[in-house]
Length: 296
Image 1 (tube, rainbow, N blue to C red):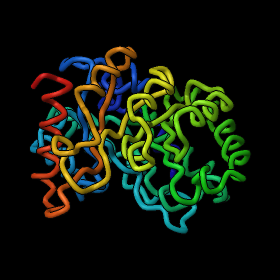
Image 2: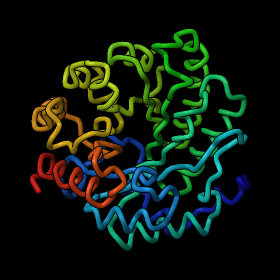
Image 3: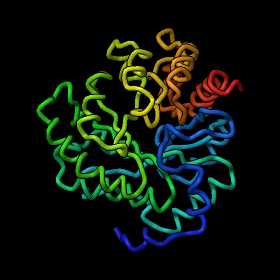
Image 4: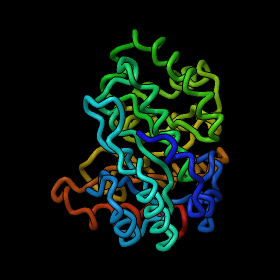
């Protein structure tokens, strides 16, 4: 990666900075305290400029853009390494009124954050990209290789790495949003052990629901200050409005009561009978979330 490219300030990045800065849970939008986004990789547009237009067509306020594939590489294979590509994304975002709410390091779903030797470079590259684009939050899932329920012996290594990366994120003014398999009490303890406002929870409804946990109790246990963003969907099967184990109006009341505000990002909850119908699945879920959280 050519780091000098990232250090060039662009007028587009500066213009976008105010709309996406630093604390994802603190952003209050024109639409109100909640904004709705979709994941570019789940709408089948990973790192594609067309993700922004499709997000607009779906009705989303924003899009979470992935850092690209990882595999056995030393770092992400990211189109955003290129300054012109970054500027194109930022122009398209501004032109269409669809914000880039966060970057995602989805490669860690399958790769080990605790054990891969070049993790500092991987996350460092993401942070530099965030700073260059004025993006405040990065999604960092510990995934199957970093499942602390099944592999608790990895905890010291994960804490050590997060503590090392936290000052880098703090210096850049960004937040690393951690997704774990832990329950809320254990995740809160982990975050408190790391001890940085730049490492927070990127809460995933599906993890709590699949584990049979009380979703609202989990949110309240973590608290507003620990949650930077939320993946607000369940596993695939039915749309959110048809899901009997998610009482979304009750979730909104809980988040209101906690004083939380920010981005709710649609990842899954696709209709199992038609899972690849992107416009229908994501359009339905976005419209439903807007009806609940924005009164749309």
